[in-house]
View 1 (cartoon, helix red, strand yellow):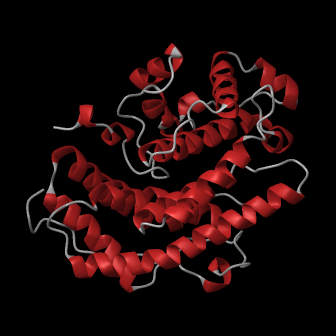
View 2 (cartoon, one colour):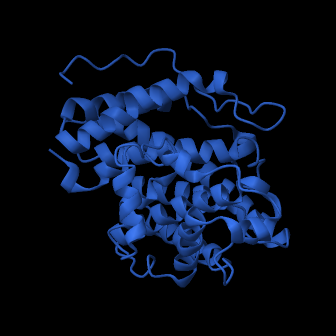
View 3 (cartoon, rainbow, N blue to C red):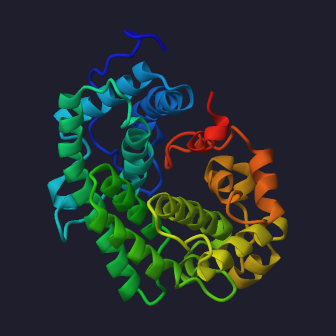
Length: 317
């Protein structure tokens, strides 16, 4: 894009939409945020990385600055310590990762960013961090009390703590997220399954194991980038990875465990496979590379910040 072509940030939504009564996403309510995410922020943050576009980076910052000025997506009753984190918590975690913090991390080193706007965004991120930490602590408490261990939503919550901590240069908070991730992933069973998902997810069990895999790989990658080794070799993540890949080839084992035919095939929703682009660089299993090739440029995911290919210099211009 050229300077002056940034769509002006005017009257943007500033709240995470409520879910429908049946618990599903209200697509109509989300439409404005989805449009901004897919057609502006993620495209431009990818452009800033892949092409070195300073104008694209500044445009992303303008959108974040608008939200910062409006204290967007912050609800004290949900975000303060001990708050009602279950209200919008899952959707807030995903939006934080995919549309707020990861795009910011992609553009933060651009030389032309307005430092006044950056300062305002980082000040707002302090509140975003509090929301993320409260959500993560709530999910960890639930894992301790429910008798089945971590729910799949624990992992995006911890990723949101990690990404926000990096943006704010909070190494202690980042290390806390990694520590709690290690404790959570360690609960993966010897057969690679997550007890909570086996018990509750019925025909979507492989889908939700894929979700855990996706967020876990992103946490491991951020750990690697920030000097923490061994996360990709964690035996629990290896077990989960093998379970997921085996289930893509043949879902029979999971179907026998759950008693349900697996009706939601992750290979029909490649946006949930963004992890393969990263993991193919760290493990030798040819199935991961095959999936990354099969679905290349179809992996863009608003929960993990645009096209995963652009995390890697071999896809930059």
